Length: 113
Length: 115
Image 1: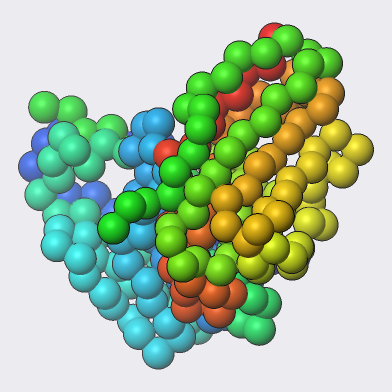
Image 2: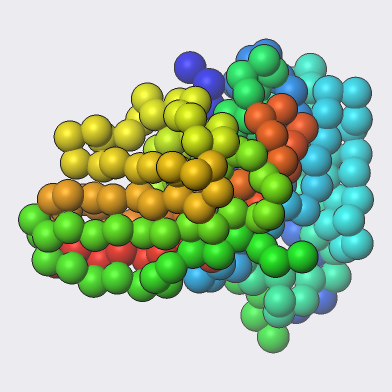
């Protein structure tokens, strides 16, 4: 069964601290992996996309890693800001399946002052 | 560039009533998706359109849910009759086409509460 599992489910950190979110997947055949940020009351917005051959991708203070052998990805947030408070969703796209996405359950991050 | 538009943003109905949601995708995007997102979970695909044709509706509860995209542009999702378990956020997304590398852009969603 194609699945995407994320951990932790929720996380509270202090402003300025770093954090790392984890994603494990079993989706096969693999096409790409995206990390989405979803603010409360808004739709998800893509932060990064990685294909099989890429093992790291940065977008400002967000850095995503991918280990296609172990089927694991992480999202590292550096020097967190209050505006980083959101849900972060790991999404895996299956190859040869149109644009069908498998979503993780998300990690709800709260950054406190 | 305008994003994906959805309306209404919020809707409260009683069980067994009917409700409809509207979505206008990004101009030029051929593929349109409707997702159901239950609180604390990731979105679940309900239906995918390519232009005005249905590509995948395998997870759409067809006894009560219906969707159309008659002119291949905007789309309507209907629930008739609604159940308590339909309370969720309904997200619409669009992409340039169906290829796996085409980013899906999401609208703000419609939050449905069924009482």
